[in-house]
Length: 447
View 1: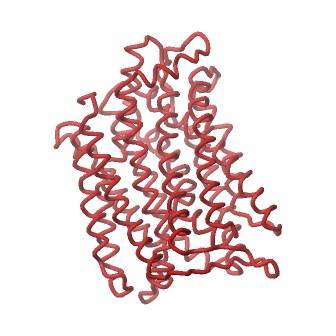
View 2: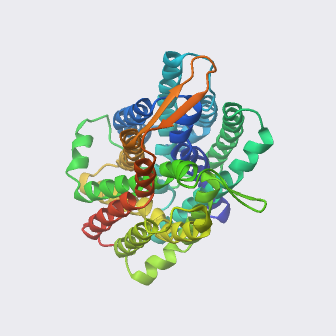
View 3: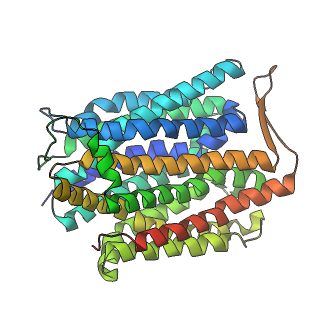
């Protein structure tokens, strides 16, 4: 039985990658790139899509490399220990807006975004693979997964809730605010990642393939549970990607900016912080919910249905700041489902890895977990790219003023843009959640 200290240490890994870096990248980057940094909507869409094409290669490759790593620190832990500093540093640089022209800015954004994706892969793929070597007990895997999700959502709540207040504290231009906050959050993420690597323990040696073999990649597509699980992971971040990336545009253009309720500021990060808190609570009760339902598969199905129903309901809320607490409440109800299924993703991937080891005779844990990370990032990127493209299609244009260097956003069809944003936060995610429920229902491993 792993000690509580180790479970907390494991949670710090996703608090850094999921609760800080990925959460900020998911919710803030679309709006940051188009409204602060100065990329056009087409450039922002192409950037996020290109990064995912990059991940198609780097994620499985990193998983295969991690599986073959042998060091005094273990197989997967050294990537966390020594990758923590570049992970935080590149994240900080990505939030810096250089005084360059449109071409220079484009090169900066593309270069550092791709570097950030490489660093994220270098740290997060081994982190996910750790679950397969820390314990072989299925219940304990669920506990580690629950700790992981609670860590991610708790830190996500802190990050998103504090963001507008930290912006006001920093002051200055929005470009200055994002640069300072990027540096601060990058430092915290680096320290948490390092702590995760130092506090966890690899108890079981993976069954290693003797040499690199491209056939392992073919084995993945012949692994039916992997195909289903990767499709589910893609949908899960497709679902979250729509909601988080659309939130900034929703507050800005549908509610006419931040909503002030007394001293309380509801901007797009604070709005989603309530959802993070909900996910944190229901991520913690996910193991108990799974035992009550009777299987991981059916627990995931019911969680997906919850996401679909309340996402669709959100569309019918009046687009008026007076209903902001109704919006918050329905968004939180939607997040009950997300909180319940999030720990199950990685626990079910561990089952897929065990199935693959039994079937093929060698471990491909890193490769399988890397594909899960890749699928999630791919889902988030496509949803982010689609949002940028669809908003551009609906009538939004972003460009940089050559004289002042400031970003100018114009709207040619306000009603179409507002309806599109509202749908991107509600109806699009609802459709994805229904597809996810069907895929999980068909999942072959009946645990």
